[in-house]
Image 1 (cartoon, rainbow, N blue to C red):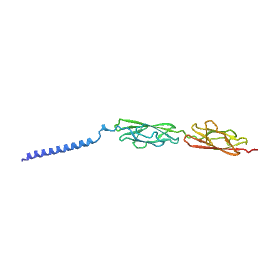
Image 2: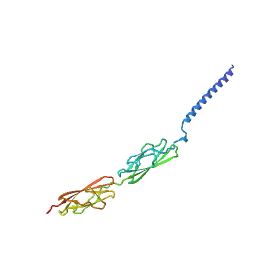
Image 3: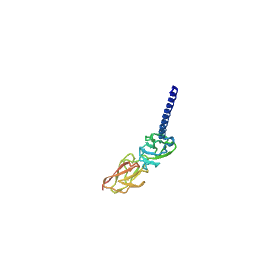
Length: 240
């Protein structure tokens, strides 16, 4: 075989090999590309998988299909954070600020009363969205004080002051019973005299007095269940 013929044969073999390699490479690349999700296959799931609040309890219990929640916190709770976990590939904002899925939001300041926290979840496809809301109710300040305290007989000593917890009163022997009229500072508070609830603006049931000292307890219970106790020691005089 001539040199020129051998060269032509070598070129043909080389082209055949290149063709084989190119075909194999194309097949592998095609398989790899076929295994990768396309942009059109991005998730449309815009749900939250989990939602945690730093104070109070979510009502109802969290469920990804439930969009609206409520929580009650004490007056001493000035801020809360939420921790939303979005579906894979989705993003989430809390009151307009982006939060990494599963991370804690920046503190949300709470006013006394109703506060709304809004979480918008955007699916991986960048189109589908869902909005979750939590309404946080911050309670009124706890008011355990009495505004006034009056006796049906005798005078308080010292004169009533909401900051003073202990009082005395003198009554004659002829006073066999006494009633107390406590006035609470807050409408949401409740007063009890010797364990019995007193209606707003009303007086206690008559309390029997023995000769000598009689201690009467007045307990004010605030909306947050905290209490404050006042005492009145009534001294009934002896018979002459």
